Length: 312
Image (cartoon, rainbow, N blue to C red; front, side, top):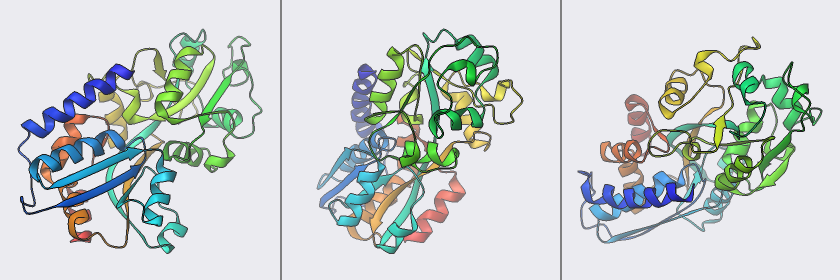
């Protein structure tokens, strides 16, 4: 999985060098700082590199750490932009945050490809109530309790230790908040994926941006768990995702139940260099960056135009 991010770093440099990019002009100078969601991080790094290429007098500094950190840093004025992969909280709005919608993606349940129950999991999928019993009530401790006909094997449940959009969105799907999630806390998407990959009876969840490689295939060693959204007891073809293309189709058709929006949190209405950077991210050039990086989904054109108008 580490190799995937080395490839991403190389691709960022290629993007900056090769794309025909929108620019505010070479007169722009200064630094834009961002922190927060792991889900947005790869795209934000690429946006930053491309914006710097188009505007040599500008430096863009991006750090990850989870959506909670991004929100807190933006509120405290520690960064210009907080990257937040969940819906804004009313309390955050009251503290002066202006959320700007920039991307959308989804969160997926993951198991190891070594899981001995994998054929049953892929055939039946997991109902929402099964996940509630794993992550909220803790009543399900063995796989036979959530999959009819499965042998009795323990379930090792993994969640996130950092305050993040993935956990917030996963918990919201289950009717709760991140602090209500049970399981062993693991830091960051890469940590969860590595842990699940090694544990044959484990289950976790991870962001769209981390479960697929640049070739569009699911990362080696993990499998996306079908969510039996209609409760039929069978994983329908449209609920089984074996590559990025299938997942994107379901997300864009509003058929996947744990899709979500990604935001930039700015203290007050964006202005100056920060506004210029955000407008670049939402421009045609910025959208080409999103498509090239492939770890998040760009906004539909009409929605993107609405967001741009709201900050002009």
